Image (cartoon, rainbow, N blue to C red; front, side, top):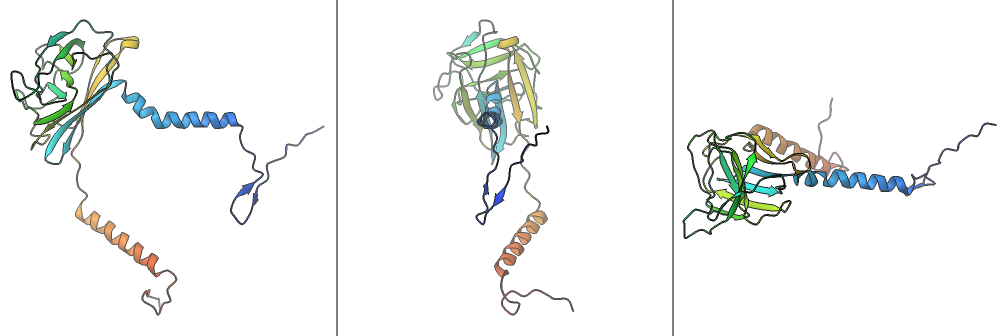
Length: 247
């Protein structure tokens, strides 16, 4: 005996809705929902696996925006500095407050200096260049790559706990990326192994290029023509909107 499976029937009413549609089981909906949540939140989950310092042009200024977290369980006992300086060179970059050593006008910022970091020894184009941020906020953290002088050092707040959130911003007034000797690119440092492996990444973003005037003008003309066409729909030819007719 042959058993024929009935196919779901679809009935379309004037309202545009379907009735008697075979729906997947609730378990399928749960799986799809979990998959959707994973797709939505995966970028933020992945970003927390590393410290990211994003460097971008912001008007007339350059900003360094830092975020993420660090796994320091696989690192050895750090050196300490009770009054650290926030400085940008071809091998040092930090996010956080504008702090200067022995400067009564800036706060004393205590940090830990973690060694055992591997990566490039520099990321800037101008040797022996230094610049201090004009302002900043949040945690002070970043990288001292050594510039070929010594091993790279991860700089974190003094009382930082492994896996805790890090957020900070430094601003350099009236500088361009070129002034600071920085070119667009990505630079990465790594430390630890297995479950204690982690990384820091510098992302120098390219300067946004304005759209060419002819392209912008063409888009504006197209937008205006489209709006006029919509306004003229349903109007008689002898009215305001007239279209040329072929003879």
